[in-house]
Length: 102
Image 1: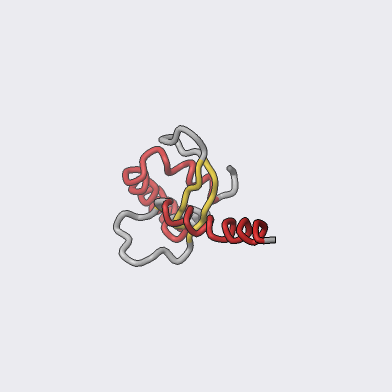
Image 2: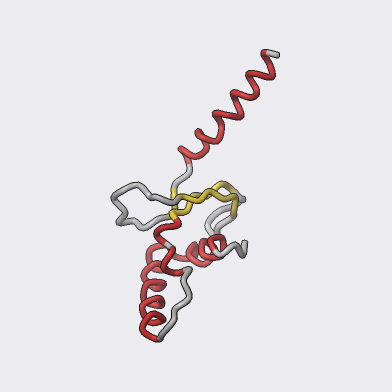
């Protein structure tokens, strides 16, 4: 019974420890804590093997909305280009994860 209790305690503590070591993909200018974090197992282009990644969904929400007019389309494209500069080749895989395509 003690072994079972020890294993359950170990499993209970493990996710918190794993979450502490994962660096989140977010806006580099973010000062406050991200209000909506998402943890997924994925392999981004700069990774050698799949691992747990953390994404600040709030920083990418504007790219997940379909534009309704030309002005919104232009604003969306500008925002996407800015995020591509900040995150490089990670941006499209992150968007795929957020759109549940991966």
